[in-house]
Length: 227
Picture 1 (cartoon, helix red, strand yellow):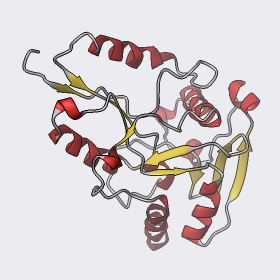
Picture 2 (cartoon, rainbow, N blue to C red; picture 1 turned 90 degrees about the horizontal axis):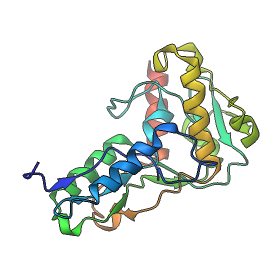
Picture 3 (cartoon, rainbow, N blue to C red; picture 1 turned 120 degrees about the vertical axis):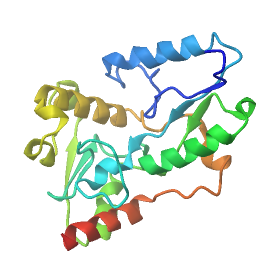
Picture 4 (tube, rainbow, N blue to C red; picture 1 turned 180 degrees about the horizontal axis):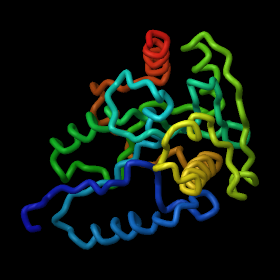
């Protein structure tokens, strides 16, 4: 429409232009084509906003901060004290709570469109996947089992599935979809796909508070032990 001057496509994940051996995600062509289509409208200000993995998933089933994300256990299973790590866990992983993404998006929308970066990154936490174990243990005072998942296993369609994913209704109970989603996510992490590119929006809005994984997991565990 002629009245639209700003637009943020629903990317909210990682760079969909990653090569096939890192990002095995058939629908990834859609956001790539959408960006190409947006480039045809010079009057339109738009940005590809990425936030890595939603931190919300690591705290389930606890929700110390309101979230609308549906249940899915990635990297960490608090109930079963287990951590799922891609390869050797030395990659870079960005984790951001959905509420932080909303705060940055609100500020971005108020910024004049000509100041928008073409690629925006919301970086709540940047760490290595193997660090999640020690952070979870420190936050909870509990010992966590760590499971390293090799790329060959993941590519073979047999990723490790955290126990809570099989004990609750996840993705409508569709195990084939569950395996595909987990395999795609962990394989991308193993290939450093979650070291997301783009202008770090904290440089534009340094006053926006971000949720740290340490504080988040402490709050999750406090809720869990209180229940």
